[in-house]
Image (cartoon, rainbow, N blue to C red; front, top):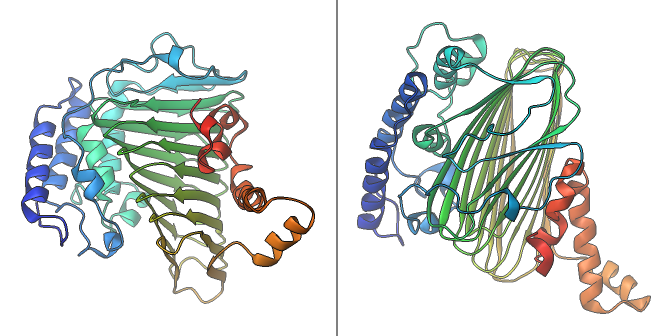
Length: 443
C-alpha cells in the first residue's frame, strides 16, 4: 500500500492496509461465482494504494477516521429486526448484516425475484469489467466498455472484495411496495461489507430505500450496482445515520438504457467520515437522471460526495442539486463531474451546489464541473457558499421568533428541498431530525 501524506503516519497507513488485505484473504464465499468475483476485486484492490491526499479525488479528505477502524469483519448482527422501527404499510424490508440471508422468512412482492446463482457468474464478470478489474475480459457489453476508461473507486473495490454474499434481484413490471434495505452496525466494531445487484427489466418500476446506521467504531462499505432497461424507472433514496467514530463508504454504479429514469436522493449526517460516490452512465443517451443530496457535518466530521454522470448518446437529461451544512470544525466536500462527449448531442444537464457555512472553523470545498465536447447542448452549473441570510433572520425575529428558533426554521427550509424527495417510507427514520441533530433522530 502506498503511503499517505502527513499528518497521518506512513507506518500506520501501511499497517492498516496490510491488515485489511489479510482479512480479505480469509473472507471467501462458498459460491464459486462470487468467490471468483471477490478474488478479482481483491487483486485490483491490492494493486491500488490506500486513498491519500496525493490523489486528486481524495485531496480534501482526511482518512484518519478510516484508519481508526479495526479491519476485522463485523460479527453476525446481535440486534435484530425487533430493534428497528416497524416498517410502514406498503414496505418490504430486508435486513443486511453481511452474514445471514436477507431473504430468509421474507416474501418478495410480485415483480421481484432473486437472480439464480447460475446466472450470477456472467453478470459479475461483466460488472467487474465495468469497474476496470478485468479490462481483458471478453463478452463485455457496450456500457462496460464505456465505463472501463475511468478508474474504479477504491470503496467499490473494497466492498466487492470483502462481501461474502451478494443480494441480487431482478425486477419486472411495476412493483407497488417500496423495497427497504437496512443495515445497522449499532455499537459493534469492525467492517460491514455489503454488495447489491439490481437488474430492472425494460419498463420495470421500483422504489428503493437504503438505510445505513452505525453508532460504534465501524466501517460500513456498500457497493450497489443497478441496470435500468429501456423505459425502466428507479426511485432511489439513501439515509446514512452515523454516530461517533463510524465510517460510511458507498459506491453506487448505475447504468441507464434509453427511455429510463433514475432519481436518487440522499441524506447523510453524523459520521466521522462518510463518502458517497454515485456514478451514472447513460449508455446510449435518451434517459433522464435526477440527483438530490444533503449532507451535514459538525464537530470534526467529514462528509464527501463525488458524483460522476456520463452521457454516451444524444438527448440525455440531468438535473442535479447538492446541498451541504457545515458547522463546528466539520468539513464538507463535493465534486460533481459531468461528461458530455461528442456523441451526446442535444444533452440537457444542470448541476448546482448550494452550501451553508455556520462556523468560522468549518470548511466547504465544492467543485461542480462539466466536460463538454458535443456542440449542441444545454448545460449549466453553479456553486454558492453562504451563511444564513441576516435579512431573513431579522424578518423572523421581527415577528417575535427568537433568534435560535429563527435559525432552525431557515435550516429546516434549506433541508426540506432535498428531504421531501425521499421515498415516503423514509419518514419513520426521521431524516430531518437526523440532519438537524435533534435528540429524536435515532428511532
